Length: 391
Image 1 (cartoon, one colour):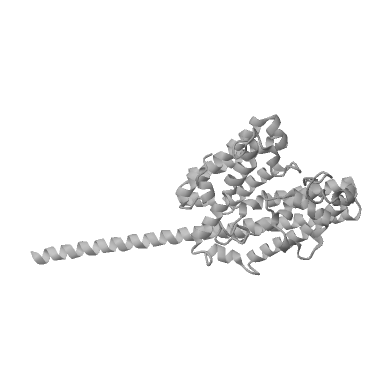
Image 2 (cartoon, one colour):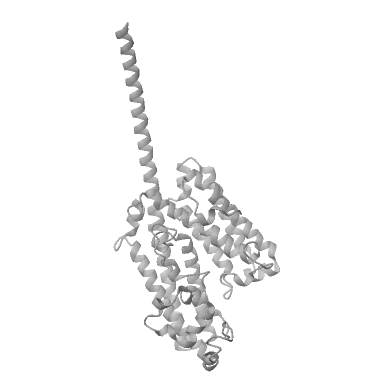
């Protein structure tokens, strides 16, 4: 009888062990499949989303430089307007890339692979228009060490906006150069314009160089950060860490697009007056709305993998198709609405504030999902700067 009981016990133990082994094997298989899905998403984000967008941005920069060189050769109002339009086309591409600040383009303080290259190309909201005017008057932009000796608010795409769209008046107070020492007055309107064109060309050369360096970092034929990123190799501990950097980059829509580009000028956040319209991004060029639309397009490209394998597909794989479709629907709604707006935002906020508030509301629907639902089902982290914010 004792032998029979021992036999039953051993058989039961064997079955339990077999079941446990099977469960472990199944869990390992599921984990392998999940890692494969993440790797596919990361590869798509780098090779089919970020790199092609950066290449297109470079093409637009080349056209901008060509237009500027034509303007430098012989000024005309018509050519000046062509230059301004081409700056807008270049900025639209960069605004899509603003949603892709992962890897070397990202902040070294926020992203594991971040190297702060973004700020060297476009530093908004860090811009000092008076400083740009001072460099314009002194022609300091001609110095060989100009970029190493100056902070980012004196160069980049945002400085070029000032050079191309600002009035002939200096933006500095009267007690400082170039007003206090008479440099601005000595230049005269024509001299200011000539210096601004020369300055802008110098800045374009630098942006082209930095964007090429960024492209070389990712290029599989050169430094190949793409493979490091997709595999989750050092400096990442795993592909999940790489994925978390991509997810963190999407929060630009929360912290910058919704809060800084809309809530602040609307007077909803960190504004001491009824509105703070003059703090709008792209105020001089009236490009604020175009930039927000481009941000939404950039978010859409990353989230959907530009119609390849993206977060939307990964959510379906995890069993959350309904959430995937809801995010896409909210994106479509926000984009469709933004494209119907007629006035530039600096006029819309003053003349038709409720219409602009509706754009803020529609974008908030996306960022609410980004902060509340997506981190849970994707097992990813909300950035510290977005965690305490309530829409």
